[in-house]
Each structure stands twice: as C-alpha cells, then as structure tokens.
Length: 227
Image (cartoon, rainbow, N blue to C red; front, top):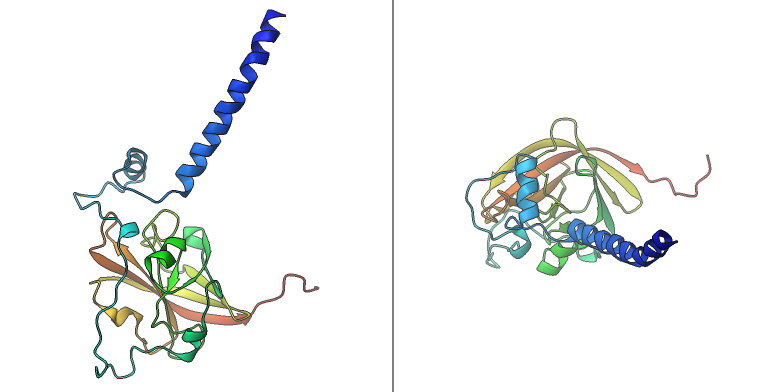
C-alpha cells in the first residue's frame, strides 16, 4: 500500500518531466541554428561539419541585399521584373527538395521577414515555365531550410508546384560567388531553377548557387481525382 501511495505521488512529477522533455525537444527542433550553441557545435562535430575559425554572423542575421542598379544601366534585358513576378503572392509556389527532405511554400521577396519564414523568391526571378526562365530562390543556411544545399548532385531533382503544374528540375551545377554577383539569378539561356544560400556555414561571406535544369512540366492531378 505504501508503494502504491508513493507511485501515486510520483505520477504528476513524472508527467511534468515528460511534458518538459517534449517541449525542450520541440524547441530544439524548431529554433534557428547557432554555431555557438553547445548542442549545435556537438552535432557539427558528429556529422563532420567542424569548420575552421569564422565569424558567428550566421545567415539568420544577414539579409540578402541587392546591388544598387542605376535606372539607365544597360543590363541587356538580363535583370528585370516580369508581370508574372509582380503578380506573385506568398505561397503561390511550393518548393520540394527530396535530398533535403524539404517541402515549403515560397515567400514573395527576400526581406528578413520573408527569409525567416522559408525559401524566398528573388524580386528579379522568372516564374516556372519552358524557355529562357531562371526561377531563383533564396534560403537561409539553417537546419530547417538550406543547411545541406551542398549535398544535391548528379541525378538529384527538385520540384516546383505552381499554377496547377509540377515542374521537375534535375541537378546541373554548383558554384560559389560573391554576394554582389547577380549573374546567377539572371536568365541563363534555358529553363532552370537556381537555389541560393550563404556559405560557408557560420558566415554570410559568399553565396552558393545550385542550378537545376528543367526536365519536365506536368499538369498536377487533383487530390480527389478518380482513377
């Protein structure tokens, strides 16, 4: 009887400990990545991301900013805002990256607030489609978004769901550029999707651009469509 009484008194304490553990786990899974965090540093070492000394200015605190372009600058039609882009609204497009286990709505613009929500469409981006279109999307180098953007390689694909169609893009190449190099978001001469994030991890010194070429565009089948 005494044992049962003690167990009865312990149950609320055990329930509280379990609830607290769940809350801590949820917080750890959703909070931004910080290289100076003990747990993040341990995970970096565990998965082989023990980088050399660098500033603790992470992508989460660094806006992606545009070069000042004079109104009379001759860009030969390489950098412009289309009517389709002007009509875009938050969430109109979904980005799927199987390699990163990521599926996320694409925000309209690359402000700090936009990037904090997830992958974000550059203001000068084209929209998905065939022809000379470059769908350029930025994302933070956080575990929640583009942390492993260096992983996709030959044969890997990304998908854009937009306007009732599913656009499939296959990996083409990857390169690191200066933050002021906007050639990666300009038209490339073919249909592609370019994903851009800060690099190396822990800094916002450079930009990594990963380019995927359009492979197919198929009409999405409604979820309630019959066989």
